[in-house]
Image: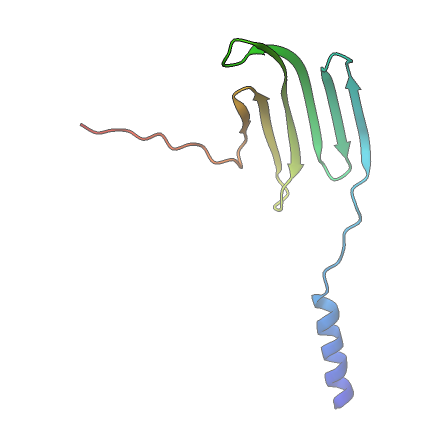
Length: 115
């Protein structure tokens, strides 16, 4: 009887141990950089993850009207979520910050005033 209980306990513990997945294999990884600061990036792995991004050097004026260089980037990434659906996030980043859109990103609520 003790051996049956021990065997059941062992099976229960073995079933509770998380199974580690093998890391995703990289299918494509390309980075092209321009000496002036622009770049393009392409990445894809066998688990469905994809990322494409470009960066472009722009000259902007600061609050003192002095020029400074910034890299404006835009792109997207996609992955397969927990329920097997492809999620795609489009984004850009510039002097106004990072901006992202996608089905999984909550939309801002627009307040309507009533008079």
